[in-house]
Image 1 (spheres, rainbow, N blue to C red):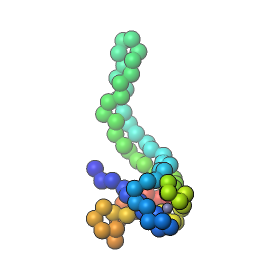
Image 2 (image 1 turned 90 degrees about the vertical axis):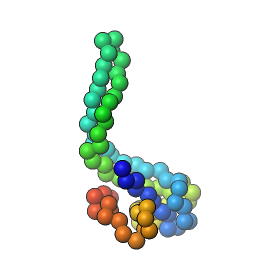
Image 3 (image 1 turned 30 degrees about the vertical axis):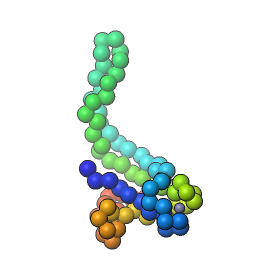
Image 4 (image 1 turned 90 degrees about the horizontal axis):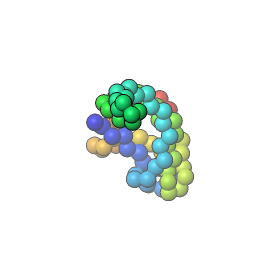
Length: 83
Ligand SMILES: [Zn+2]
């Protein structure tokens, strides 16, 4: 699993963000006879990040950028995430 990371260009924060996103998932809902639900095998079909806000300085939009874990220079995942 790859992890999306962010960086705030205003204050340099790379660790604290509020991420607002929409997810499509498929999951196996496993009920007991008594009606208790256990969700199993949840699969992420798609995720669209709507907004990322810096927890330190409250910057959002263009000020918060997606960075790759490797070096931040190249990130193919950017193309998978319309914003
Ligand atoms: Zn910030």
